[in-house]
Amino acid sequence: MRPGRAAQDQGSFVDIARLRVRAGHGGRGASTFRREPFVPRGGPDGGDGGRGGSVVLHATSEAASLVAYIGRRQWRAEDGRPGAGARKSGRSGSDLRLPVPVGTVVVDEETDAVVANLDAPGAETIVARGGAGGRGNVHFRSSIQQSPQVAEPGLPGQERSLRLELKLIADVGLVGPPNAGKSSLLRAVSAATPRVAAYPFTTLDPELGVAELADGRRLVLADIPGLIEGAASGAGLGHRFLRHVERTRVLLYLVDGSDADPWAALETVRREVAGYEPALAGRPALVAVNKLDLPAVRELRNRTERPDVHWCSAVTGEGVPELLQAIGAAVAAAPAPPAIEVTPPLERLRQRGAPAAAPAVERHAWGFLVTGAAVERLVSRARFDSEAATQRFQVALDRMGVSAALEEAGAEPGDIVRIGEMEFEYQP
Image 1 (cartoon, rainbow, N blue to C red):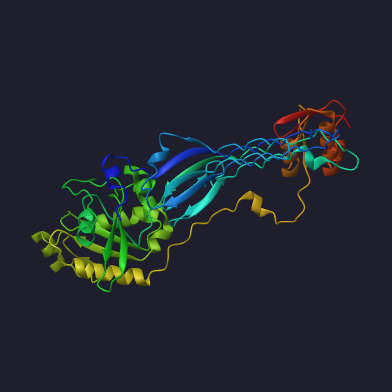
Image 2 (image 1 turned 180 degrees about the vertical axis):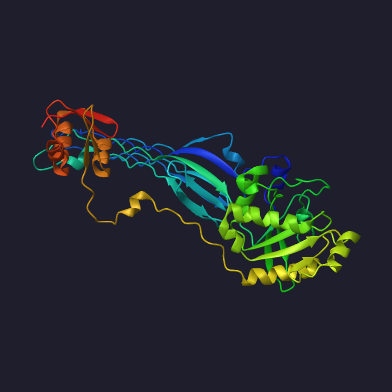
């Protein structure tokens, strides 16, 4: 249950990564005609292009951190193959499947919206969808046009900048100041073997351990590296450490009983946790004082009247079973942590069958800008390698109301019109 121990020992634990993903472009449709002996007027037989591959992120327990995405930021799926004659469709591009650790949150860098929350093994999401393949000229045959030379190019694949954030999922989060004995306690209650030493900041990366209760239940505990004053503002990598507390059901505040003022240290940690996320202040929590094996700490316990505080020694094990039992009761009574709100994809916001929004026309000093999902999709599909293709494009613009909108906006013959990445000269 300890994620990537060997990788962590080498300082390669990574819990945030940025990458640029691009799905494959769709293959172009073919503009061909049937050519066989004794068939003098074979009709169109151009096949469709293949769909471009998509980029898929999937959560797996085999991945321990996001280190695989540090040295490489550009990821691209395979393009679809073009269509061919005899109605042969092009091969679709292969999807690019990228493994990420369980607990990874995917955020769109441009909008800061949460794209996906991969909080279970096997969870997956399409972060960039491959472009559809273009239709071959066989689809454009009609009673009027028996020999169409029109075929469509494939649509481009989606391209996005993403930020991956790993937020460990655990029942209990061990938080406290540096050198409070959190790693020692994790060793005492589970099979985890975090690094333990007599100096602050021994643990620089979160550790997970599994503790088994007397009734057979298992709890996942996360050892969060030590928090110092100002951690909520980022001091001492505070944001990186506190990120892993968000998904825990119960917090265990652990302080060093031999500290000059353990209660002041406790309040400092509480303040930093609440400063990072106010909702965490209301999360169910326990307080434990460690190092009961020291005479000074035992004396402190004898003169302290705080029934809500648990006293233990992670070294000798004194008080640890009682603390573990209290943790199990707190977890059983605690509600699940709030779910992370995921923003639905833009293409799903419009109900299926609903009419597309009319194109919008904006006037600028250089000309006119036409925007709208339908008209931009039309432009990406358009080809201008023949007179028939150009005429078909013009008819489609008229049907969408683009020509009428430009005329209403005051466009004159010869004005520049920009749609997507293409510019045209307006000719009514």
